Image (cartoon, rainbow, N blue to C red; front, side, top):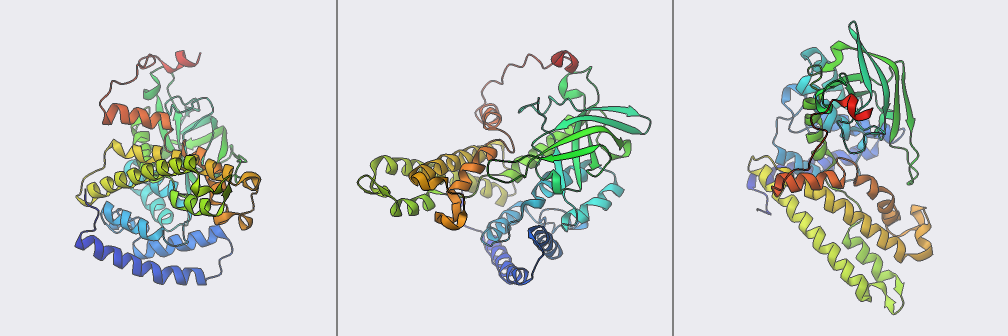
Length: 399
């Protein structure tokens, strides 16, 4: 494992940093109407410079660069206040699926506008009765001439309320095992019969949504992949999702150490409390292990290799550390921990945000349980779970 940039990587990092310093300043100097407008403007600026999707081919607006260059730019961009999450799902999961399975005209129509931030996409997979089992989809699509008529419900769809388009996985054949009767489509989220209801979250935000389909007609020309072969298409999306969601960000041992120096405990500053110091040491060890695991991934990318399933370790550790650390900090703040005004809180409410957001990070991009199974089976080589439903027709599973 190599902790240092190669000469070529160091040169690219310096180039990216110089571009960011100049362009972030220009971007912030502009008076954008709102956060969405600012996000679209920044996305367009990156696209024009070839930084929007560095690894994409130049013919689709990318830079034809390497994965390690993409990582380096992401690291440098994270140091500036220009993180807009509106495009992560579309560019990280949906559009790559469109690029892999759509026809040429569809790709020409959608890839460019998405890259420039002109159109936003969302992913419609999860369902109320499915839990962590993506293949347990009940939303039905029935063929009617050149169209498919879709009825059902999706849930926890991030960003659907501000998205223009989406990819949706539906069941087209209930008479075969659950993984074999699925089909993927892209659709206009403004289509008749699509109803989007934002879900109010405990953080006060409403980024997730319920999406209802009532006799929604989707042309067969909008199908991605073969009929009943949607699981193959979904795997492409899910693999991209693992990379796009990545690890959690936010409060770290460094921030809670700073807080502990200012908070009083029974016998002086909290940082002097032996029980707290033990927890702080645990968080530090976990964070260092996570950093080194990420360095392994970066080393693989730098050598032109593809990171393996061990990258699942990162999200499990990061999300759980964030949740545990946030809970400890809020408890240490005592009655002040319930205040939700960032202007009145240490580090602008960083720990309160961790408490509210970390549980969602343990679900997004694969639950802890799913990722632990991946690590157990694909990294450690342990026997797979017994699946009694593997060969049963889906209709027999749902009654």
